[in-house]
Image (tube, rainbow, N blue to C red; front, side, top):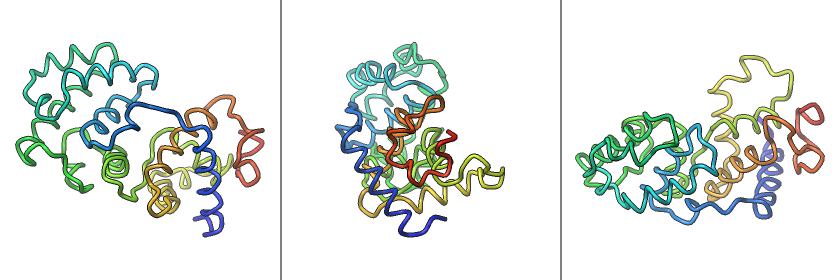
Length: 217
């Protein structure tokens, strides 16, 4: 694990970057748990630009969990097209119905209860908790994994160091108290737009002075 000084430096640099370069996305204008959940399910394996118009259309048709639960699953799947990965609308519909049955239409605010719902794993539960409920919870998606691996582990990382448990522990260590929302959004934006799989923007990167991979990314 990085030292406390290294953690603070990374937090400060990343949040400073986000203040200048963070994207204006429609799901960042709401803290409604249902709307946050819809965005997270839609963003799985789908590019942001494709999700934005479908997210807006979906919420016009199904503005609440109750409305979604009342719909027929085939209607939900038809509206989802052409995002692909069509198990997602089925799972989202199942979440809506189970939430109506078990929680009176309100998504639970605990990790265990969220992960007991259909198709919600550790990442999605963490995203809902931090983005909707303001909890200091880590997230670890593809973009976050790339950033943390490059900055803290370096190009000669071993399979043990790449392990999910190691990366989750690291992600949890880095979350600043009271700033999980901005910090997690910043991590995902940074990985999606600067610390990209190909042609990362290393020369202008605020982490280059201590990145374990620079300049070999």
